[in-house]
Image 1 (spheres, rainbow, N blue to C red):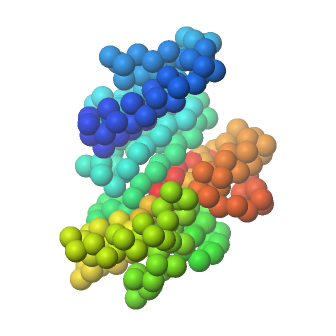
Image 2: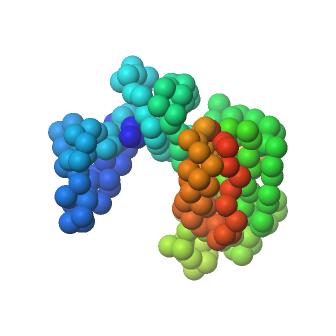
Length: 250
């Protein structure tokens, strides 16, 4: 399972987090071995790699044939080449790709891709600050304040930041900070977009989840239930099956 990071430093952080799960769990230590020098976690059961972290460079990410690929903070990658490279290899093993990212800069390639996904979506369901959209091959989860005029309303901003660790008190404290960059720290990273520029429909963590050709209806339903659970969406209704390319931007 390759994990794409925006830079070498971010790759080190991601690997340390994944390795920490193994180190702290007796069960996981019986299944995996952490190889810190290679930034990878190998499966003791199969002898194969469980997770290997790559920096966002196409030349180092080539040769990967994933069953599941993860791309973290895609908006920070210099381009979308690594994402597209891995996405193009999914059919070889009927794999999936999951992308998680904060909002990007208005007009960036990343934001243009998000606009394309929204425009192509055959299914769109919006509840407050949460949007679920789906194409034939991709499911997309997104949280943002829809109207920037509401960007100072803590209730709306909290709705766009569903992580339980982010409280209303945290948001109020951040908004009241005398060193706050309202455009960058608040509009782009916490609620909507940067002022004075083309609107980039995004908020703190914009979420997209997509599943590229799942192997079966049962597999698709299980995958989508997990995606909704990760996203904090409490609907018990399973996501529609039959999608092949899972991508999650959040």
